[in-house]
Image 1 (cartoon, rainbow, N blue to C red):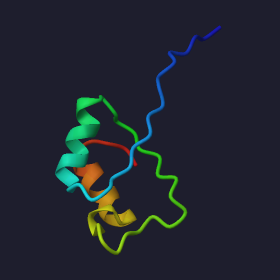
Image 2 (image 1 turned 90 degrees about the horizontal axis):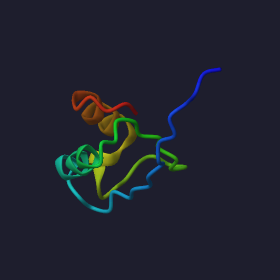
Image 3 (image 1 turned 180 degrees about the horizontal axis):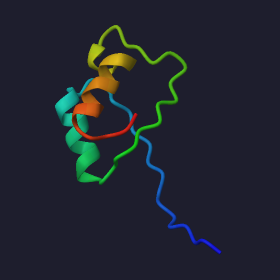
Image 4 (image 1 turned 135 degrees about the horizontal axis):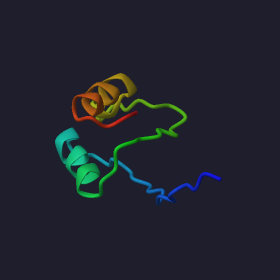
Length: 65
């Protein structure tokens, strides 16, 4: 029987932080996978967190969206 390692699930809000600060926060907490549960993954005020921009930035950082 295969055993699985349990890993914690974290929640995070981006507020108005910059994308570099957001990615640094993920790295400091050893987060390598993001599940975006927003019903509308876009922001008028923090466009760095629009879905496609976020996917691109995370991909460059080695973090899976």
